[in-house]
Image 1 (cartoon, protein in one colour):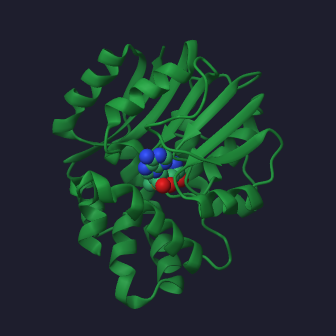
Image 2 (spheres, rainbow, N blue to C red; image 1 turned 180 degrees about the horizontal axis):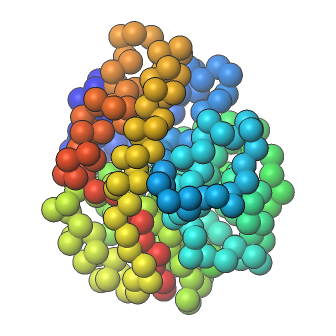
Length: 268
Ligand SMILES: C[S@@+](CC[C@H](N)C(=O)[O-])C[C@H]1O[C@@H](n2cnc3c(N)ncnc32)[C@H](O)[C@@H]1O
C-alpha cells in the first residue's frame, strides 16, 4: 500500500477518485477522536512571518497546516466575498479561513460523502457549508465566486486542464484562483502552460518547498506519534508516506528538490 500512496498520480485515472473515497473511509474509521482536520504537509517560516497569527491552544497541533492556508490565501481580501474551496478534505482550512477572515460565504467541496457529513457535523461555522462535488464538474453557475481555493489536491486529478477551465468558468471577472500543490520540477512548465492557456494571469508564484520541508521537519515527530497511536502496524508505513514524515520517500523528494511545492495567486 505504501507504493500506492507514493505512486498515486501514476495509477490509472479510473481508480484515483475511488481510492480517495477508500482513504477517507479509512481515516474516518481510525480517527475515533475526530482530531484530524487537515491533510496537508504544512508551511513553516524561519523569519517570524506568522508572529501576528492568533490561533487557539487546541489549534496549535495544526499550526503548520493552518499557516499553509494562510500563506496560500494571503493575496485575497476575504471581506464580502463568496469563496469556493475545491478538495477541502477534512475541512480544517475552510473552517480556519471562514472563522478568521469572515467571507460572505464559503462553500467547500470534496469527493467523499461521508467526509462531507463529518465536516458539516464537526465544523459548525456561520456562512460555511460543505458539499459533495468533483473538481472536474463543478455544479455552480458561471461567475458565482470571487475566489477559488485549492490546496494540495489538484496534482493527480485525472484531467487537471478540465479543472482549470471549471475554475475559470465559476470565477467572476477579476476573481482569484489561490492554488498550491506539490509539482515535480519537470512538470512545472506543463502546469504553467495550462494555466496560461486557460486564460489566468499570474499575480504571484512562489516555490515554498523549503517552508514545507521545514514544517515537515518540525512536525515529523508529532505526526509519527499520532500515526503510531492510531494506525495498525501493518499499514503504518503508508501513513508515514502520506504524512511525509522524515525518512519517507515523499520527504526525501522534497528535501532533494525533485519535488517542488508551488503557491500561485492567479486572476481571471
Ligand atoms: C491531500 S488532501 C488535502 C485536503 C485539504 N485541502 C487540506 O489541505 O487539508 C487532497 C483532497 O483532495 C480531494 N480530491 C481529490 N480528487 C478530487 C476531485 N476530483 N474533486 C474534489 N476533491 C478531490 C481528496 O478527496 C482529498 O480530500
